[in-house]
Image (cartoon, rainbow, N blue to C red; front, top):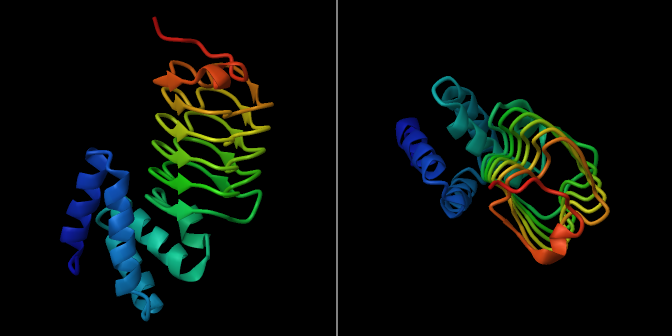
Length: 199
């Protein structure tokens, strides 16, 4: 894990195999490794960013875990890769490829705006993403459980091909192709979401 090619390989393997658990392990190990050397972590992020945006994105998640500062997560193209959040400030904006494979619970990312391909293959549970505004291809192939996305506004192709359980998206407003072609949708959630099912 010390040399960046090894880190890059680990991150890209986890990404290609869609292994959210592996991202969590990598973040935990690196958080311990950099706990007493945040300036070194910032230097490492700058170095790794030159060779691999995904690996730098994972390191931005480590930086957040140590500092609770969303700066790098919101700046880097793959910022917040694999991050785990239980709470956060409101009214943040994420775009491009940020928050891929992120795990949200509690009251994380309320009143957030997701654009581009943000939150690809993410997991949202609890009361996360309440009052969210989701556009473009954000949330594609994600999994939503409990009462996530309540009161949300979803447009374009947001949340396409996702898995929807429980009482997700209650009182949401959905337009265009939002929630189209779900991989799974619970009977309860289908009352709140009008979707176009793939034939």
